[in-house]
Length: 488
Image 1 (cartoon, one colour):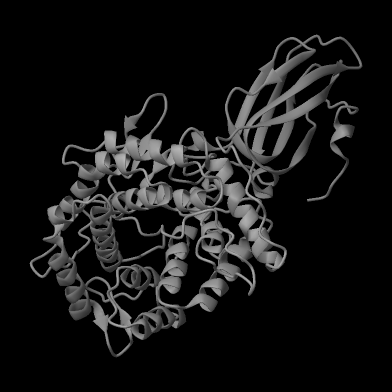
Image 2 (spheres, helix red, strand yellow; image 1 turned 90 degrees about the vertical axis):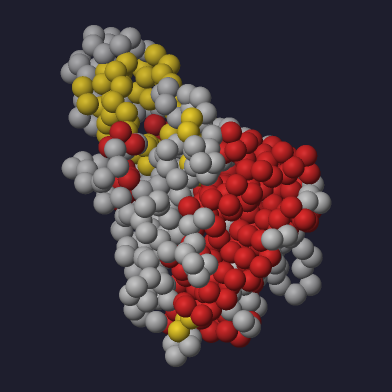
């Protein structure tokens, strides 16, 4: 990117048919664009037609959006073709966009005049009401920067609900919600939005009681028709963490039957040995990594959720109601140790091909499956060192590797992981953290076209929680930076 002039110069230049420029607003924003279009050189004797391309990253505005090869709708591509009839005019783009850059192309205008763009303004919107204090200067600069970018990611996804990405989808997903809620407890404290999101899921289940993987908030709250088994398990976890972070026992009690129903539905899918197998009949997400076998990881998610459900029952004083789940947890843990652990390689495997993946190790460690801290550490290290192991491509899955590392005492390695992954996005110029990022292939897209990717995505905001609530990277002598959330 080469800077041509400051923003004030824009209002002094005229742009003729066929000309174009890119405006840089300096940081990523979610909101609306407005400008005043004024004719230059003569009276405007025709309308003007403009193409406006909104960019979260430079490739959005520096490369053509077409031909488009993605498998999700091209209607999500961030562009508008608008016609302004009567000049001079104040024009506001009616659709909300996520952007730092705007490319303006004058597609058509009379040859008798040019057009000047005055007062070009981005109107940012968010439900965030506070701005947390920065981390103390004793922290390394890269940690302070990752923390800031993580908070901006959360801020720009925080609308009337926690959107997964303000550029594309703009819907609420359970998996994203858990990580956004954790980051929010330690920073923006949008507890009311977390609560609203929990009720949206609880109020829009499918016929068997499983919560949807996602729900649509607009034009009115709507069933998403997308069931994701590992996400359904995380509803219980998110509710437990909300109650811990806020003390809102009334909400916990009201939504308790929904949380318990998720576990009941998932336990019905175990085989006779109490092991989960991903048959493909219902979607398990875990990560977008190509070829990932998800059976072992999803088994871990279910055990993780079961343990949190028992903790929530204790908090709500209804432990006797679910006391029979204790032996089930033990049985599922024993089944995983007996059938999934490869003692020779020191890793857990998944599926008929005994696939090794980083995600499977992470979730089984978080579920408490390894019999010792040393065994858990070895499983994570061995998978990460295995060149044939399936590695994640999303910040969502990398978060759970970092969280698993913290769960078994690998603080230095967790910090190194955040530095090498989120730090690499920062080094690449990220203003907000991205939906998918493979350091070995930065232009990769799970959708078949990089222009379909979201570059401000909810599930990538978790470093703020890791730093502030879990103490990751905290220098000696620095007090706890978290406002709350340690119990979550």
